[in-house]
Length: 218
Image (tube, rainbow, N blue to C red; front, side, top):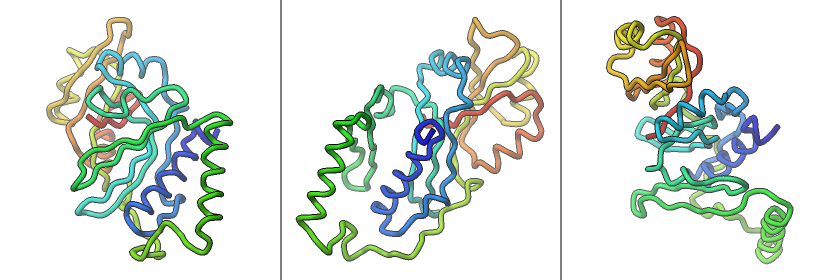
C-alpha cells in the first residue's frame, strides 16, 4: 500500500527536497495521490499519445515558491524517466549549472535494500556526530505552495462524441489537443495548455461528463 498509494514516494521527495532546498519539509504537507484510480483505458490513451503513466514524486523551487507533490503523471519519450521500469527507480535532477542529470538503479528487493541500509549505517559509524546537511541547512519548516497554485498541463477523458463535444470543451479550456482511441467508444480525451490546478478545477465546474484527469509533463 505504501508504494501503490504513493506514501513511500512522498517521504522520499520530502527528504530529497529538504536536501535540495536547504530547509526542512514536512511530508504531511505534500499532496499525495496514488495509482489506484488509473485504469486500462487510461493506459490505452497514453499509448496512443506515445506516452506512459508513471507515479512521480516532484519537488521544485520556482520564483513563486517551492512545491512538492506525488501523483500519476503522463510523460513521453523526451522525459528521461520514460524508460524506468520494473524494480528500478530513478531520480532526475535539474540544476542551473549542470542541466539535467539522472541517478538510476534498483529500488526494490532484499539485496538492493539491504545494501542501501548497510551503506547508511557504515557512513554514520565513520562520521559520528555529523550530518549531510552542511552549514547552509535551516531546520525551520519550509512552507510549500498550495496545490491550487501549482502550474501544469492535464490530460482529460470526457464522455461524448468528439465532433459534437469538442466545441464545448474548447469554449471552456481554449485550444486543446484532442485524442481518440479506435477501441474506445462514447468518449475521447484531450490535453490542455498550461494552467494552475485552481484554474483547471474552475474550468471543470463548467463542463459536464469528465471521467478522469491525469497530470502531464511534456
